[in-house]
Image (tube, rainbow, N blue to C red; front, side, top):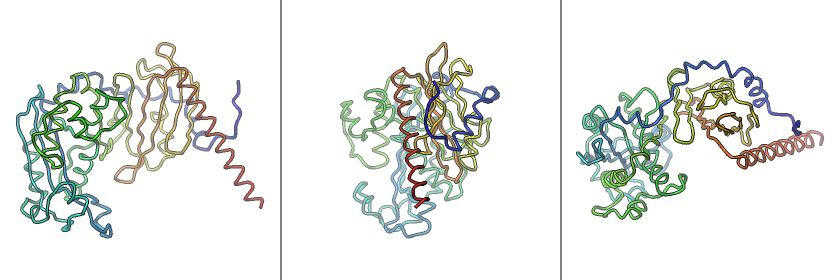
Length: 363
């Protein structure tokens, strides 16, 4: 039955035109990391935590480039059996913000005169990189530390950690996958209490938080560690470097950078809805639509694997480019109908906005 509603937006019209040719997307660009094979590459786990300071006024021009200046780096190194084998802890002498923000002072209990006894960031990073070694994967509590580390690295003109996205373990996310609903994000101390881990040093310093994060990581089942994350401070540099990864019950794609959203949505790989398991072109039940201009949804059905939801998130990179994170997972009929309801609601809202604009124009 033909669906009724107002005319689709220009972006959606372009998507419909491109959908007809998506089957021609080159298979050579589909490179998946499946299962636990990635862990064979990394011998050690470097569990990292940072403390940072920020401008007290927000008026400095530099705050736009470096909103958070790292003042402490703490890390624990685990071997492949997740046993602690080494530690790293250094204060960083401030070079940008010479007054401690009141929130930072209250949280980490450090004074500026203590930080002045530290070493400059460039020296500390040289020591830290040497300490990390060659074969390791970063582990953090939450997704922020690697982003801020790379922002500080770029500010000082140092060599980047990598030439594209960095694969890492977000232990906060892994805790939720292992013990909760996969979506809730808990404080580190909550996880320590939940797992009945002894609190033998104070929280809220870089070394201690890295220490406790390592303790949580050591408690997780091996199969949970396949749910790794990507830090995208640096985007894939070209189409061949884009990320295609298959997890236990969904697939993720991270695109290279585009000049704008229109260019991103014109890319065939971005809007492809092929089955991520068998790679067959699928019959669409719900064509691409957006309720807000940032998230796009579609549903297509595979004869072998069932109905698959695709979700596109439009994001901005550090360099001002647009990139796409697309996730795909198989869903139930009820979940598909919920998406259809979202589409109808979006159409009605667009129709209402159009009517208001026409009324204002006429008046």
